[in-house]
Length: 112
Image 1: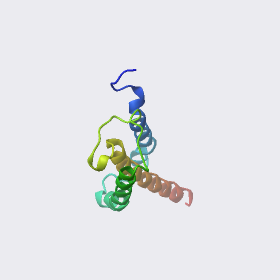
Image 2: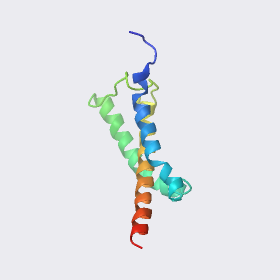
Image 3: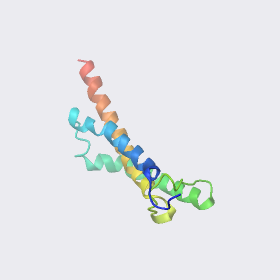
């Protein structure tokens, strides 16, 4: 078997791209301007991400949590955490905020 990157190495990245495609269109379709409100995003992302990155680092260090090297690009950041996991804690909260704000717009339109 080849030691280089193959299609499976992109599995985690593909999941993140799927989430982006599934939610980022809401920014433009409903003009919710989430991406133009950095304080809102930082408030949603930073506290949770820091907590869970610490948790990930601890779990990885203890051997309780691993990442399949066949499904990641192999770029490892601080605390032995793969790049995709850092991106996860940015992409997923943004997608959640976009979805929540999109639902608010739709509910407001239906309540009229």
